[in-house]
Image 1 (cartoon, rainbow, N blue to C red):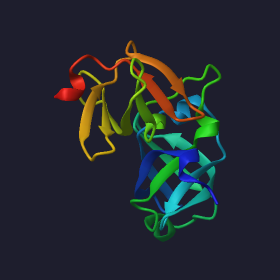
Image 2 (cartoon, helix red, strand yellow):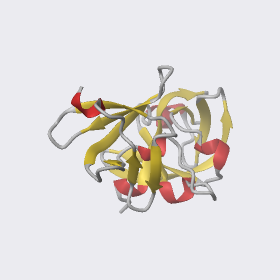
Image 3 (cartoon, rainbow, N blue to C red):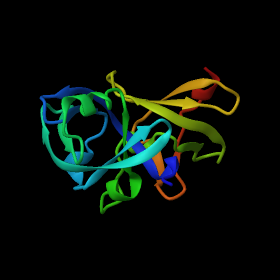
Amino acid sequence: MIKRETVYKIGIIGKPHGVRGEVCIRLADDVFDRVEADYLLLDMEGILVPFFMEEYRFRTDETVLVKFCDIDTEERARELTGTEVYFPRSLAEDEDGQVSWAQIIGYCLVDSRTGKVIGHIETVDETTLNTLFEVATDDGKQLLIPAREDLIREVDTEKRIIKMEIPDGLLEL
């Protein structure tokens, strides 16, 4: 069984494309630009199931058309609409250890100066001029932390921890 901590969400399946069983996936990560893979993982009723790809091609910068093995009709493809798509973390890491914003969802955020756990990163908001980590604290609060690379001190992909210099007063807002 594939564990959730070994994968990260890269997108969601939209409508079928054509009648051969192709689907359109709205991407939240550029994994197709960085690595080659034979399969993607789909969340089928809470279970991560590998679906092998026959082929894929980009439609836009944010969408890719995928033809999965054994999905040969529009009807079969339509059953996948709305399904979340995941990718193995082990395959996605760059040779130099770089990770994408999408890969850090679920990472623990730690203040590098105090060693205090701030919370877990739920999403990364790139819709504004300043990218923000949306962090859920253990006491149920939601925090917005600037995701500036000059504040990030260490990223431990094995332990899924980001140590970051939290600006003074930010946690008191």
